[in-house]
Image (cartoon, rainbow, N blue to C red; front, side, top):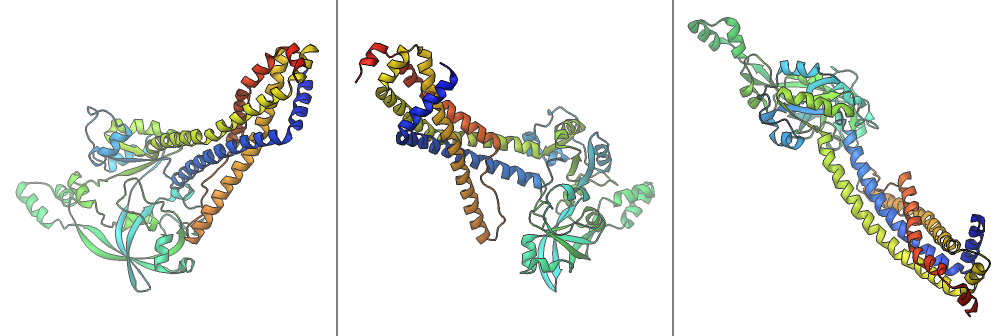
Length: 459
């Protein structure tokens, strides 16, 4: 029997029992819709999490710290064995060494310090963070109100939206205005006592100056900054920061201020005389694909490393398990729908026994009868799959719409919780056809085994 004849016979048989076949197809569509809706929820949440992490601009960055400062992260990131090179201080010499590694774009310290902001005579306690100029292209500042810093050493500030709302009920009105940054500046201690000690011991004046650099005093200072932008996210949170940066300033300006930070005393005690020590440095590479290679070069240098790639590996595993569970529960409705296909085709055998007998008497082989029922099952699976994908997309659209309506009422940014990519559309339709063909195995086999003589006698 030609394939064209099979299609014509299958289409005629499906039209004869239109109501029953339509209900069966609708059952398949509901099963596919539940599967698509659940998987689209998992895909949407995964994409939202990935976009949030990517918008931080830290996917191409590596946090480098002395091993003593990053023990927990080092174990999680799989740092080198315990017998590797001994712990090395993270000073200017190490910073230059990191900067000369292949595929490294820049190396900069994490500068974040608590301070007081004065705006229109009112004080506000907050956290200030230094932002490198390269962060402009990281995606965290896309869609921001206002503009990015005009230069790496500009006395300008970008406010996080929540802090901007504390300053004014209309955050946009802050743009162009000035605020006063009050902070504590580090100043090296005078070398008088150390100089007297050097004369009695015969040490040189240069050694005394180096020893003096190991201590500092704190002096209150003020700096005027012009507000140039307002950003929705918190891009300066960092990997292991003590707080969120709600006032962002250029990194060069932050370094110039020499503001006292919470880790200064610990850094001072661990630093060698005459050298600047860092609690951590951020190493930015040319491409996220180079993060693993650069990490492997940094670990033998005696430092601990951590990157968002290490964290997202566990996140991907969580989403894979989550998608698997959603797929299993979504498939249950499709399995129930397959029972409807079996019931429909078995009833078709009883109603069409004489027709099957005539076909066999005219020379139709068992495989032709089997193919006929397979085509009917596949047609119901195809139609049900296409209709189910459309229903699943509508359910996902409803979830996005309802979620964003609620978020707008809470004055929160819109998000996408459900996403239906093309691969999910194709996979759902293919799965629907496969389940339908599997459900048609028993009816097709039973129809092919009918005795043509008994089938012709059937009333």
